[in-house]
Image 1: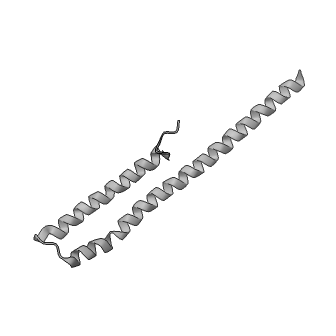
Image 2: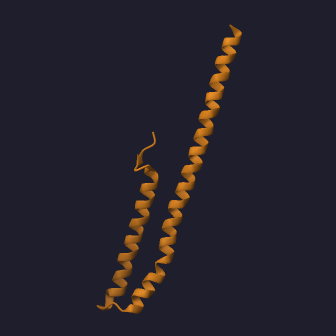
Image 3: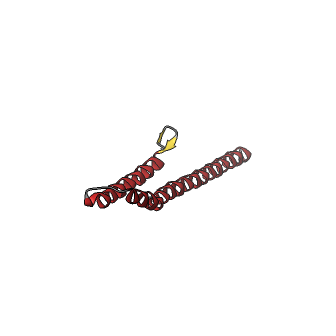
Length: 99
């Protein structure tokens, strides 16, 4: 059974949610560091935004890997179903021929 939300596989939603949650945790930790002295400077904001590139890239990469894996699984499932259908048809053809 393949569950989907708005046409997107549930697995993708779960990974995307986990990636977003990881970004939120990273952001909160970074905010604690930046605001530790009681003020936030422009340099600290720029450093934070520059440092956000790697966590964002990691989140996007995780979702892209999952999407690729799901596409591969769909292809393998389709091939297996086609092979099973061909096997079933050849079996019924052989039974009809033997009668």
